[in-house]
Length: 312
Image (cartoon, rainbow, N blue to C red):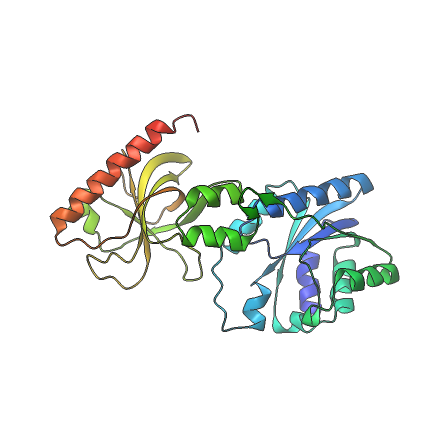
């Protein structure tokens, strides 16, 4: 518990605070709805607004057999949370020791390490061992320790239903990038250093940048997508293949992006790719010539997409 308390204290804003807590994977529109409410409550009370983000996701510690596909890396998540305008973001490493804390001990840790005077719980929040810290139990603890608490009971809804990380992952599995964008409030994106791949694209006139992504990263359904790639602050229209390249029988999924109208060396540089629209599913071609023709068609479709959506 001391290690967790010290980790939180390192991110403390140095004054009394209002807190909300969760994983916040993806920092989607529902998360930002909760954080906007937190900032409003904090401002009204003269408190600092603090978001505590758990990593890894508790289910990964409690059920190691469950595979988690993260929408964002922890680094990206912290950047997105800070961009909401909160006073502090406090990462908390979720360990088996943290999982064993009682609701009282867990909430007391927040109270002491972050000078918590107000707690805003989301509709699905439950703290402590075996999720015993239900809103009713946390309200009892609040009375004991002397802080306010509130449950934001109405989750944000979109046209297709409730906004959640699960809904975003489902949209990615279906390749529905427009739906993912609606749920996130921004295009789904991957980023990472450009690493050397097989360099097949260079040999057929379409050199691609191969982005290193971790195995625990959520990816859209395999296929070819219209995308927007940003390097060194400059954005380029691009076509991105996500998959295992069945023409060449690769085994590991890769993210390969062809930047239209770009010249230069990208190896070792960080590339951010927004995945905008699915063009087609992944396909196996009988020859390199057939693959080349398909890529050329994908590039033309990408140009047409950007021409049509120039004002977006």
